[in-house]
Length: 305
Image (cartoon, rainbow, N blue to C red):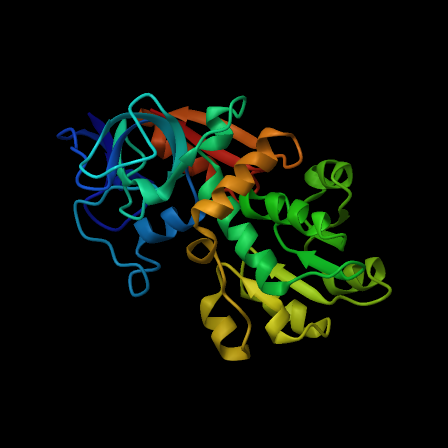
């Protein structure tokens, strides 16, 4: 089978697609033929070595967490799943950007009928991260919550989950994404110079919680807006969060079968939109990350093996 690999830390040029042995499912595992596997900013950071202390790589390394596909074989002791089942889920082994992947069945849930492969293969990292971040700041009806990079993979889901809690949402995003935010009942605010003043103008009753999906400058913005550290959650600025006492709940906290099933049902029945920015064949993994790393993508970029 074919799978994405890299043999050293570096830029996109270290990525390649290799022929590798077909994996076999062990006890409690399923072999999944991958139909879609989204890519994520964290994968680029790991590949560059920027998270080597927190998430070290061993070489040669595979890549990918998100996945959706069809079970083709099951290992010993598996119940509740069978070959032919359509599933979505996640791999902790950095292995989903491939034609096939073995996954513990505790990391799989059934794919609802009618949910596209592209969306199903995009739900774990972005969806679980958004779910955990929203739970961490615990929006209450009538409160105002700010989300940075509000049209990105995580941000676009987070703003919708916050609105489901009947809170007001201010979404920081480029002007190109303002129409999408408005269509989802989110107040858009342009990033850049003067951002604090624009947020204050959009939130006359103040800001009670803040979800950062971009970087440490937004933790500082949240503090300047008077948000208590315990109601700030960041998925990227871990060092700054530790300095000020902000929270760092993300995909690990949200990656449960219960959360994934709930997200899948929300997406399947139209209550949650997961924008798909682009799809690429596996062989164009470098091009996919080139688009992702521009940091102006609305929604998810997905590899189709």
